Image (tube, rainbow, N blue to C red):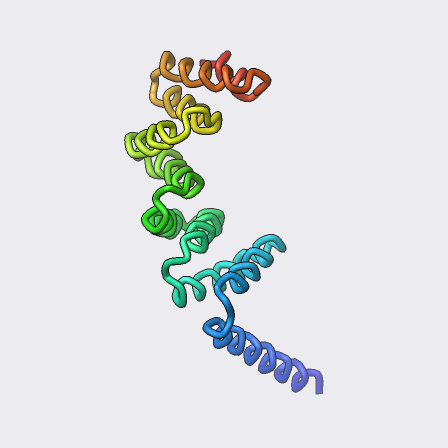
Length: 175
């Protein structure tokens, strides 16, 4: 009797999952995206990934879904998947600073594509010369590639903007 109930429950769960997949085209992309965000917030990352992949299949130009899918794929250790998603997000919305920062960080931290990461950050700095996060990241990269004078310059510029920033102050002392 318990085996039969368990089997029925499994069949029921599978039907619900199939209905959710079929429901994607009938749901506004924003609502579907909000559900994926909710799942990610509940740390149901695999389910959020599935939802975002379905959303992207239905709405290929939803840049924020590509970016968020990249974040989740990176979290799961799928560096190539994250790269594909970040690059697509940046291609769809080339002025979005968050998308570009995610891509630059992946280039630098995981792929060793330092020149490309620096290029993205310098482009972001041109767009917003007072962005402390960008200055700090340029300082980190400069220090990592053996350019301490450049690192100090970026850290000092960041401290001119935010003199209270203890993280940047600590990095400046170490460089």
